[in-house]
Image (cartoon, rainbow over all chains, first blue to last red; front, side, top):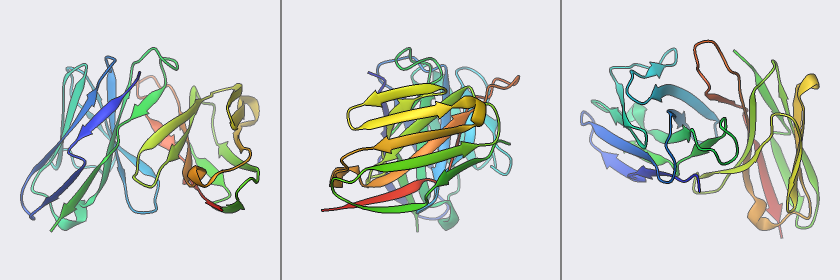
Length: 118
Length: 112
């Protein structure tokens, strides 16, 4: 149990285009989902927190108009990178919280999406 | 915000050796998790351990919340244990923000 999926796993796009990344909790309802970003050989940095049906809360320094987050249901959150540029290239990872397994506070992570903007 | 420090940053072991990874944090926490990030980037939950001791096979973890540190023990290491080990902590705030703050990780390489 407590599986989180992400799609796509890898995407290459041209500069100026928009890319949507989906995050799904497969066997539990996620009251809260989180989006992280990881640069090579670095740690994970929180970008935003989203609760189902409400606006996302962005961390300081994260442009909400650049990284659009929609948490439409208790099992799906999407991150859209708008007008992507090469500096947006990174590894994006989502996580979900809300499953009973492991405790209510436990977060489960998706496999990540590697974005390369040319 | 809360600070999370992990040590050592890098560790090279021979197969079969034991190791201890440490995580220090600067404030009281409601959540502490240990993860193993494999070479493909997947974060694998090892332990949810805001306090106390847990064991799972060759791995065990102890968190002393009053002294603000946690330890991850790996015994009889195998080459498949290689990767990055992250400690992450969460603090419950009035705003309801419960995201995890990650340490910088310990990069483990187990040699055959």
